[in-house]
Amino acid sequence: MGHKKLIRFKAIGTFSNVLEEPKDVKGKWNEVFGNDNPITLELACGKGEYSVGLGREHKYRNFVGVDIKGNRIHAGAKIALNEPLPNVRFLRTQIGHIAEHFAEGEVSEIWIIFPDPFLRDSKAKNRLTHSRFLHFYQKIMKPGSVINLKTDSKELYDFTHESIAENNCTIVEDIVDIYGKGKAVGALAIQTFYEKMHLEDNRTIYYLAFTLPETEIALPERYQRNARPVERG
Image 1 (cartoon, rainbow, N blue to C red):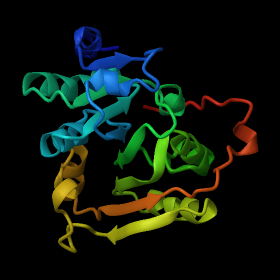
Image 2 (cartoon, rainbow, N blue to C red):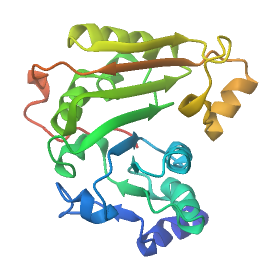
Image 3 (tube, rainbow, N blue to C red):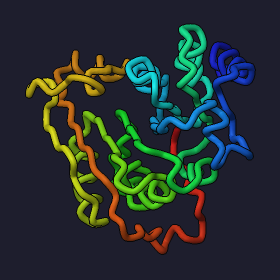
Image 4 (cartoon, rainbow, N blue to C red):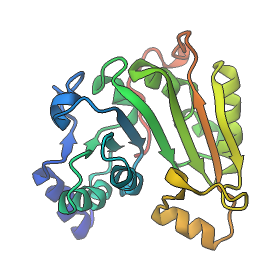
């Protein structure tokens, strides 16, 4: 680990708004935030630009950025402390462990922003809209809650469509080229570091919003032996 990364990694251990693999917050996030406001997750949050941006816009909602890389979380967590944004927290854990940290119905919305698309077919299981992850999201989300995907990857966009159909999910909104169609408003107008780079390269940005079905999404049999999948944070 580089010197700067090591410094940032150690620093988050002192940040009051960062929880690292906590053992006692499941079902108690109202105590963490000190209120009963709805909770939104940003998965694979990186530097936490969306968690911070949403937290600024929605003071009466709570936001939790989730990532395994502590040195990445450092940037957003520091901003949230300095502004301050008491409705923004960060959770350092693997996304496959998410159901260990949130209770049934504790989460009201999920954002997945420019995640690694894992383009090789052999890595498809690590895509954050794969059935095995939808299975875990369903365990913690309120019925009818929306999952938002924003990506520059046509492959991930198409794969998510397939996953939605396979699991009887319902599409709420489907936009190809949010900037070209003038749809980059509200939450979709928040830009991450990587999104700005993608736009400079004239890449198309895709957006999908969908809800999970009322019926249970089964964990694919080949993953049942290991209920804690490993993915790159």
